[in-house]
Length: 186
Image 1: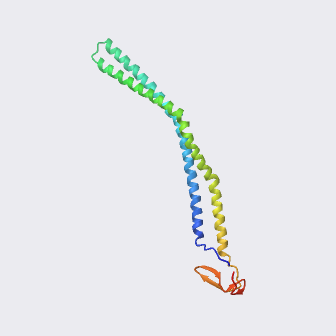
Image 2: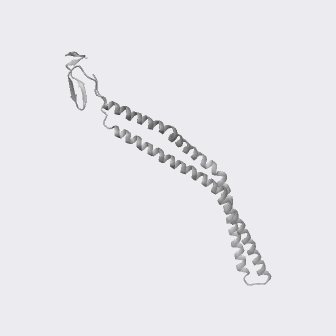
Image 3: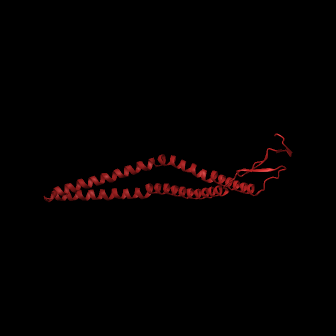
């Protein structure tokens, strides 16, 4: 007894394949952006931020020295503004300590950067591997499936020797005819 498969929508398989291609392209672009952001962050830590904070430390150290000189000058001249000069020195010392602390934090971040980023980068690399190797195979498989199903649906059913009974979208031989002999049991 010959029964044909009930293929209802080759277009759905083709639409899924097309969506998979779009997903692969978008995911690759996103992974490229993530890789670029990792590199930019590393460069920011290594150069931009390091230079900025070093400049801040130098600037604040110079300001501290200037305020100390102003305080010393105020003491020598018996200037009544010695209290404000003292406060300015304390403020400059605090600003310098803050800048030095930021430099220490930056060094800590830089030293820990690879340890924190590498596990995540490995996950990204695994996803990239899926996008570069597995998805193209799946897309090719789906394209082949669409081709085979399309050929299957356009091929006429094989001819039968006996009467054919139509039942709910499929064809089957009648019970009366098996192997061309009426009334024979299969």
